[in-house]
Image (cartoon, protein in one colour):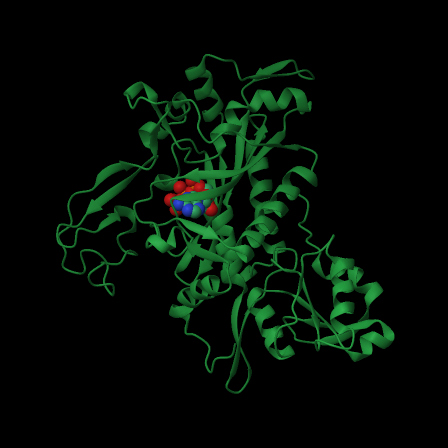
Length: 454
Ligand code: ATP
């Protein structure tokens, strides 16, 4: 697909959302019924992209290190968990109603929110009458069992972390880990956000990738610094533009009630600098609260020093959907290939691209489709490969640019004679001849994801 001009910066989110719909990355949930606010469905390319991000995170945490174990805890937990964690009491945002337009806004986001009646203005600046703020709990409440009574109330978890804390000793004993060690988990979380939006940036149902690292008190500041640096390096290894990443160290009132220190990793989205990941020094707050509310001892005994203590926790928490959006925004480009010819391209790191290589027979005859199918067979156990024989080769390249496919392998007349194919690189559009037998190594060496060690 070609256009005549690249989109201007403010339209980039709209262009990206439209590309995501058109190419099958992301759609509004229940779209045939008009959609449901702040819930999204991932299509074939979207789920592949998100799964690739989750897989790299999971491997980085639980496979390439030997001091982190995996866990998959239930979404529904004992309601006391949320009393102990402080969520029943504190997981609130200040909600402001507008008497004029009936809009609802988060008080701390009034400046960046838009009036539904006058979208060029923020609430109040539009002349609307705002009511005093009231605190609103973000947890979704439901009932366990057939009777809807107070005693049966339970919550959809608003974070995955608590499932890790309550299982801390269950994991530590069988895995024979010793402090310091971590537990990683990927799973759904739910928040009844007052003002969701910016496409999938803030939704009401989302996935988190959280890792809780248990350390000896006194070593927490050092571990916090190490994880802070390691997580930033990980995002850079993923190909996120270093100029669009920065730390935001929280101070004073920004700090959550449990945190001794907290740093957010911010990315510059078209709608401003926003959090992608949080790194928190949660002290011994969580384990001590669960000890108090459950009556169970969650302290550990250190054989070497004969000391007993409650570990401190360093948390790293990143949203899988938010990281998917970050990867999409980071990759999205509209490039003028020649005057009047603009290509839309998603420049994903090859390790996360939904399709790593497209195999394209130049024409649909003379044995080219058959050889192309053979190339697909040879690669598909290790790589995500896609066969496309529809339309002119230039149009097929552009379709793959829009899907973010880093390599196109074209089978032509020469391929039949010398068993080589043309390897076209998405970003530079450079082409080279590669023997079919050397393709796997060519793709492997160009797709490596290598995060630095902590
Ligand atoms: P905010 O202050 O923006 O509401 P938060 O500081 O409460 O966010 P955390 O509780 O630290 O966020 O959540 C950890 C991570 O989970 C965030 O960095 C983000 O990537 C992701 N996340 C949190 N809320 C949402 C949401 N509503 N939609 C998508 N991702 C989310």
